[in-house]
Length: 240
Image (cartoon, rainbow, N blue to C red; front, side, top):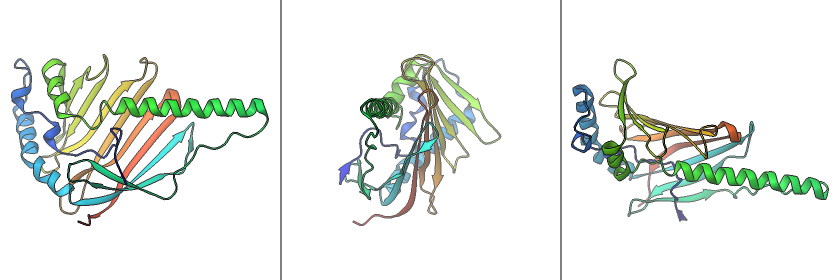
């Protein structure tokens, strides 16, 4: 059993991610309905996180490379007393396929495998700077970065932080009706240049007792031909 690394996308879907209005730039006009919504989410966040820590669940990650899906990797996850996530792998870990053919073909295949592994490492490292949004980083971003608000519908709004990590990127927090809280997170960023974009979408779901959690997280790096999908499912009360 091991602790999850920074690239684990099992986010704590609570508004401790969202910094209170006092931390926002004073010249930023906060729409009163949205301000009230954020405050309501903050008030419910601690209770939601406490409930989430009583569960265990299965995390399923599928990596698709150039349209070809690799066998999914599954782990049983639960919270440790210190708040980190412990993972226990289900089944044997998938190993990269061994190159086949003549010496030249084996060399080419080995280079491709190493290139894909390097790209995956770069993407996961990049996403670790956005997900989960760290409260300290969010607070600094609210104080120093351009922040906007988007009205997406009758009951939905988004807080959009521009230049969150890199110039030209954005982190969007989608807020639903007060009882739904944080509905989703969207990241628009890039690797070395804007010609190598990476997007991530986190869709939150709700357990029968009202606990919110990130149901599905997708990461897309089209220039690399890489698509990663992570799903959290089969929630049950953790064995104490």
